[in-house]
Length: 212
Image (cartoon, rainbow, N blue to C red; front, side, top):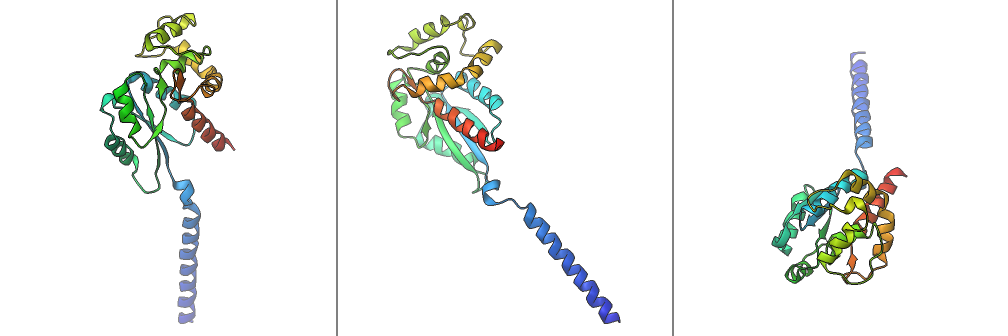
């Protein structure tokens, strides 16, 4: 009877262990679910980072958005370094973007050598802001573009690259879709154009999948 009791206790213990392993395996996420999606946006300056911070608030997608200001220091080695810094494990998928203006030729030459997705604006970032207000199909320089933005609506009159006002933030959020449509009708890398819409579309797509 002692042996039977011992055997029964052993069976119970084994079932408990097996049960715990099964529960653990159920809790273990599949590789696809464990994968962290990370968006790294390497920017030219503070204005772009300010806009990226708005995107973090607006799009609650299952994604981590990281921004770095590198300015004229941008090189292929630096892009690779920043990307690898975010890859904590082999399951981390980092999508690297470069958000830069195209009004400086030497920077354009550097960007062409980098391994990343381009979110370039020609002549400058403000073309993306202006497209929230109106179409811009004729070539334009940076100074004229900012003047055009400032006269497009009263709340842009005192536009500062350092920060967006609450009214400007709300306007950008409410008119993103029309800006994307206008941007997609322009010829990439030509003046005027911007590739920022590609990041917006990716975030919208990820947010849509999260809600499904």
